[in-house]
Image (cartoon, rainbow, N blue to C red; front, side):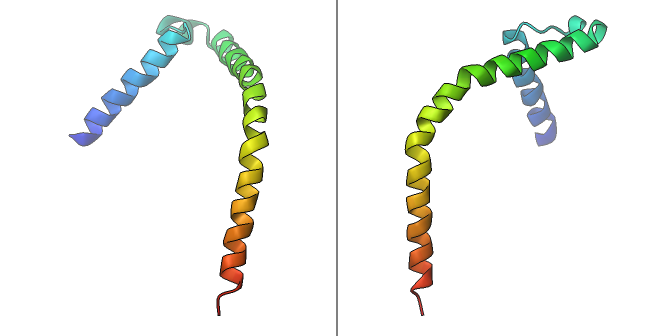
Amino acid sequence: MGWVVRTLLLCFVVGLVLSFLDINPASILTNSWATIQDIARLATDMFHWALPYILIGAVIVVPLSVIGAVMRWSRTRHRP
């Protein structure tokens, strides 16, 4: 029974996302190639929108991650 509920919930979420992206079932079935192109265009646009934010975040996150990794490595290295 849990599998059925999870599947229904997943179908609802995917349907909601597709509806938000203005993709309907008829266009998926009748215009498969155009739908694939639309999804690829949406993904590309989303990537271009997100890239500046990813780079800004990386300025802080990457150095902190490297410092954390070096600290973990140094702690494990000095143990007998």
